[in-house]
Image (cartoon, rainbow, N blue to C red; front, top):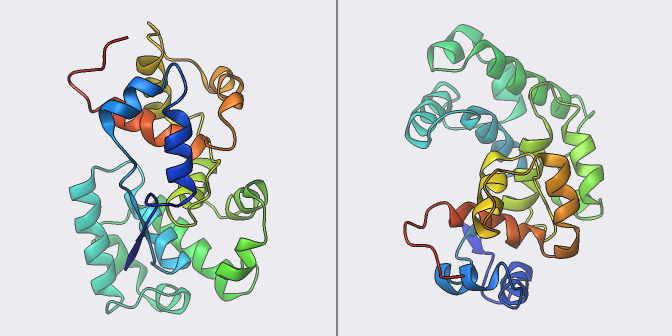
Length: 214
């Protein structure tokens, strides 16, 4: 199941606010409202999927993820991953690094070191969640911030190091070069508390073949 980010949610508020901003306004008008839907997938399963998808094209990642789920008899949990034959998971397409990452994630959750209860996560700040998830081997800040945005629906996440966000920002602002992560972090401070919506429009801006007129 999924639930909409737009349609009266916090990101819809961000979209409406960005439409009033000089740089983003024309792009929001051209692209339209945010139509992304949040997954209701359990947090552990979502993170396993995120690890599988790291640095892979969508179709290839989906194939590997499907094979991994088949190895686990369609039941992705800390216990099934820890009990699974590592060679079978490797044969399904997991690299050694990703196998290590999902195994470390499973071990931390199974042992109680990492809690992924949604009610508990709801009480934590974005930075606290990023810090918690980044303790898992192979789960860096990018994966943690995608979790904040696309699983938890947090409205003010700004993945300044993301290449797509940097490129989209440059296109929206008519820059010849992409800003680095530090410059982008500083440059987007005025967009708080709507930076998740801004990131979404940066990604979508790259897909337009016919950009809006300045």
